[in-house]
Image (cartoon, rainbow, N blue to C red; front, side, top):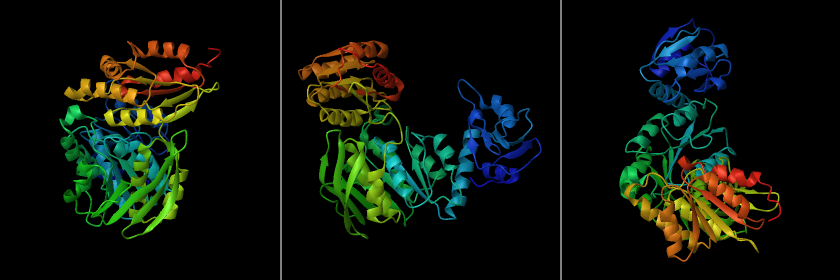
Length: 473
């Protein structure tokens, strides 16, 4: 944010100024971790389950913070803005910061979907950055704290803010849109993530569609024309429609983006020709650096966003081809010194992303090597959990997985699906046991996929494999 006075800060947060005497301006940095305080920054004291940020206000003052946002006054020598709820106060501040930057030309891009949000957000941010200063979250800062914390990073010189928007209930995305009102909104897909929260894919679509409802008439709704539930969101928006599709272009869109000549190398890096028509008619070759066929669709969404933002297709295509993975644990491919390849996609998992990762794994077999999948629980699927895990087990066999290692509460269902299709796998009660087994059995030509929901933290298995030097097997 632009540095502002403590009086303006209180106004922008909807709070009351109290505490120590006001010094210099506050900003540009806003932090919630006292270890990240910089001179002049605003420290937001957020109470949590284990620690309370109010206990660190004095320390933040000592590190150079110019003010603190608090829900109770603290004995510390710095100005404090007192609000009822610091998370809500942060949201109000972010809304005012974005509004101030929008008056100077800021364009907000919102991204949502059941899978691929973070990877696509990273692609969009790198493409837009080729045109002007761009702010985007690192990783998945897509909730009521992460989204405003990212938004306060903009100033009057920022051209683009890319806001990733997640939903765990009805109204969540609408709330995030109220903080960062989008001019461009991209809906990637509607899958089964959080099915236990919403009850059905239609319920998920209702929540995801809150993004397009928030768009202005002169904005753009970027919709996946290959997903019926996403394409069905068109009547819910006043904005112009941009479609992205694999193969055949969608009908009834103001801007259409699609791919032809899709192909991949042995590491599942895809190339294609991107086409656009509508207010622009052109085509260009694209060679992706990110892995997996699912990223072709994500890349097409990125092209549509770039064109809607006013960039020329050649610049969009070249920037997209130069884009690299920015958020870890998402289709992250590492190779051990002896040649073992580890595909670490352990940040999160749902049925759709599991199938996509297994498809990519199935295409990565190397001569003389095996394909091994270490799969854990997919959380928040509700009553559909057991069947969803059995279907993933079946998909692992269909992808050509030679050995399936299952970890977690639904490991038996993963193995049942794998065995029903003719495969043989192993169950491990802990990820440490699975990692120990793997280090003794994998070879230098093998490819290992590690994937589960975030709560499983299976990246430790990938780390264990890569730390092991292999040796003679």
